[in-house]
Image (cartoon, rainbow, N blue to C red; front, side, top):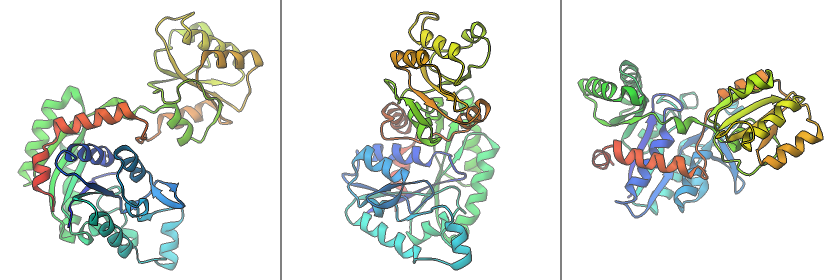
Length: 364
């Protein structure tokens, strides 16, 4: 039977996929065949006619893992799932689905990485919390929490209470997103505090801002925006979000390199100016990541020609400028297979900051 480890977290978006991806890359040096399963997924894609969690698709594509895609994501929670369960009960034996899928993945591999969903209690409403699934699969858990001193300790202990209740062993903790300027102090204090609670610390990962910066492709897909012009590079990161609604001369001073410009569609003067900035005709060294034209307003032909000539990706929405800017700023950035630069950063970071020997010693 394959070795296994369950990657869980104290909250949603604490970095489970980041750690899973980095660990798989590191452990491929020790295990020839590694499988992956996300027993319960909440964000899914349609693959081969199945609802498949997007993290399973990511791992499969990045590492070329040869598992049945449905086994990698046996239960995908669609809209209305929880309400249907409360009203009518289970449509299927979900515990059996998960166990059977895990056994299929484990059969052909030497190691299986199991990725949870949200905190330890997520899934309790239908009887399959992360803690329950870990017990079902008889595996140890690595728990991830976000940076800080008291916060990760409090959150880990809260989650540990449910793990203890289910009889699941918490092998160790990884603290993620530690601010670089505070890394030494937080690493020392959080590590000491966790160890005082009898918990092993497997690593402290520094916050990498680039991992939270969306590409134009992600903005288009996540916010379901229409492409007015695809441009030359939809995978360009939008590091700065600026609203181009002021006087053109004043706006130029605010434009920075790798800016996403959100512009009312009838502001032809601003659209054409941004194209000139991108071309280096007005402000040197400012490459524009993309534009979003708001209000459902179509620019004049001359402006459209300027956008196409510039090669800037341009999206359009019927939403007003404030609403679309708010949605961009509140986006949760998820890794995509084409994010090769981000993936390399993650792999290098996990290799450097996580004690892989401790992980190996706690595989079950």
